[in-house]
Figure (cartoon, rainbow, N blue to C red):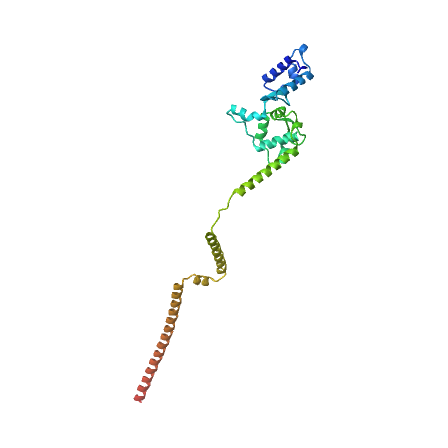
Length: 291
């Protein structure tokens, strides 16, 4: 503290509080007159002192890509967020995946993103990232069609409290985080499945269910066997016992009547033959008497 000019320190704190955007060392130095302007080394020492003094306060001095700024500590966000009725915007999984690919693979084209994700990239997502000034076009690839190449901006780093792209977490850590998250989801699903209880059934109900299943199985087997038999036999098999007896009696009487009809026909033939024979005999007798 003794090596730091307290007046300069107060000016720096006032500048950081008044500024709507992060300030670089050059921005702060240009505020002072040339004869009293502190050099970069002194200003950095002042930043270190201010940062240490914020340890037991509700805000902190944070260095991001665009410079230094005061911001509320992350652990207080639960309470600070209650000051505003509007909820912070929620971003879709597709937007975050595209933003991550641009951050880790920049410069990258839309075709490269689609090749990695396996699905087409919505123009609305790219437009949203550009409107938020998180992504910008840095050039065009020298291939047919000259597709635009996208890269992140300082505003992207500022929003995520990053000083440079080197502060991004390694991809290996992200993969391990995703793997642990998937395992956590799986274990949660398994634990929930263990909670589910199968309703207990009494023996009578179980036996009844088994009997129904056996009856259904036997019915299916009988239907399969029935399909192999002739149609007449199938129709006769479907008759009740009483109808079957009536059918047999009807057939018997029909056959009996047919036999009686045959006998009647034979008798009529015999009578006709007898009558013919009698008439011939009478004629012969008359002829003999005339002689």
